[in-house]
Length: 312
Image 1 (cartoon, rainbow, N blue to C red):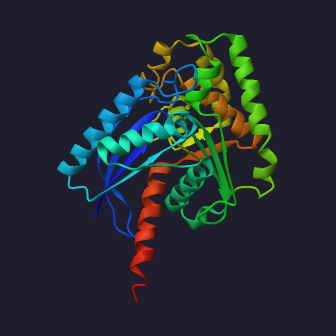
Image 2: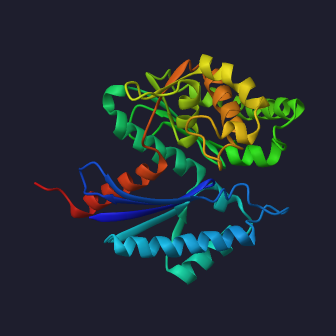
Image 3: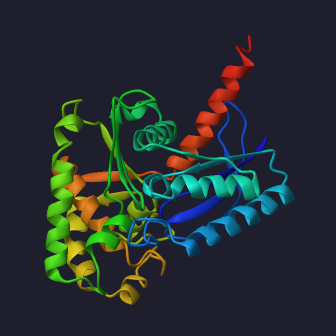
């Protein structure tokens, strides 16, 4: 069947159309997205701005038209921390439902961590052993670790690149004092959960998912046609953080895999990634092409298989 997955993230709003069947690998057929950056478009009370609301509604409406044209049979819609944390999030969800008929399900932080972990496990397989999975979104950082398809530990922290930039890294570039304060804050937040993560056991493989980790891997070790980037090394990242700190947004946008829309956030993402790798004892990590969106698809296919009953 052809599924449409509408992902209302804190940075990007994305419609992914896939051909998906239980027991088979989902195959992308079409992609439609905008960098709306909901995590940054908030008023003084933390409410999502009217302009962002209108942009989201227009995108959902256009996504439905695109889905119909492409033969989508079912649309799965979900939203993450930007909607979850906003005081007017429920109002916005109700408005989307009324005007478009789309039900956007708000995922909790733990749900994000578990579904991302599921996607990474399916991509790397059982032979990867115990996984440690890190995902930096616009509004939150998700951490999951375990041996099975669902993690033993699933943690969400308010350390998204968009949120950190909006709240603590003002300026182009931000001041050295702001960067030091942001670094202390990130490490203090991570320090509260390190014990919960490490006591579950040392990982056989650490994996980073999300656009932030992919961008950082390409910045630290630019890919070539012969050698695509699949690894982020902490030593390389540590060398790059001071360089990113002194760059303007325009200069960051010239780096590999950094769009104009994400150039403002990449420093915050680097601070979070470096801190997480250091405090969790990670020297290098693999980069996963699958993340939360694919986890949502896989869970839906699993539910379909369960509903169909045993095939023997």
